[in-house]
Length: 215
Image (cartoon, rainbow, N blue to C red; front, top):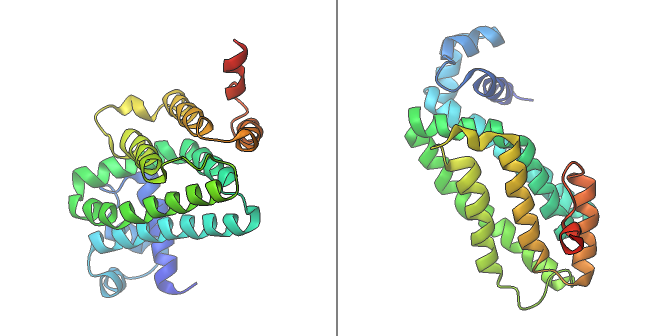
């Protein structure tokens, strides 16, 4: 790793563990045994380092998911994996987003405007693949489904800071359950089988969706 990448990775760890406002450039420099001048020469100011750190983390997650697509060759299972990741990461990502919006609104807006289209396009490709593979019904409106999924996940979990209780694992699990039920309703018989297997595999602590029909 380059010095720049080492700094970005360490800064991201500190922003997550201590909070974006609490971490100073002095703290980052001291933790890495580098001069503060080096940080300013590489990044200009704290806001740019903050932006680069979060962007690096987002890109790393995106690249990991792209690798998973090639390994799985199953868009429906990848959607389930993404939901599982949402459940595990939401408390941290939600707090981080709220603090960005409160203390560094320009960084928040910059990241939001860049990731909005990228996330939606990624979902659209996955859904189109699911239709092509026969996992979802051909009548499924991908654009509508993308908007529902994006607004549910990003709006209720990440960007809505009005209620701190939204970060509770109970709430997040219920939301992921509702999203799975929504996706399941769009699936063919073959897709439903995959959804139910994946639900047990990735969300084993929640009753499987097929239990609804047996109630």
